[in-house]
Length: 180
Image (tube, rainbow, N blue to C red; front, side, top):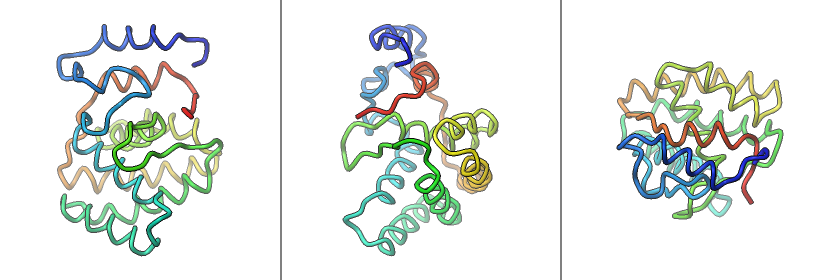
């Protein structure tokens, strides 16, 4: 953790948490629980997990993701999301961990979701710093444009990407570590 003690990071996160952040499953980096995240984050992480599910044929994965986005009035977000996932897969400069089903949420999944969330909230430049740490330079530039397109579609859908201070602080503090 870039020289930081995980217990110190948790203590700092808990000390700075607002009441909305003071929920079980959101205070310890690497132990975030899917069910405790706001719906918009759950949607993106679920879609990322579905896209990554090799047990389902690609056409079926894409169709399922499209249907899910359609149910939240964001069907037009499907194409930028799928393209973003392709760029992330092809341009990753390091292993990016994606969970399955109901398991705890990996930091990389949070990073990807928060990248999009920040763009939806109108801060695309801050979100792109995360991409530059995860992707090769060329891939990060392509992904940046796709994140903007995806964010625009998600914003129009009305999905609420509530800021979760604990996640912001934990992700920024833990540096470039991939959990195994």
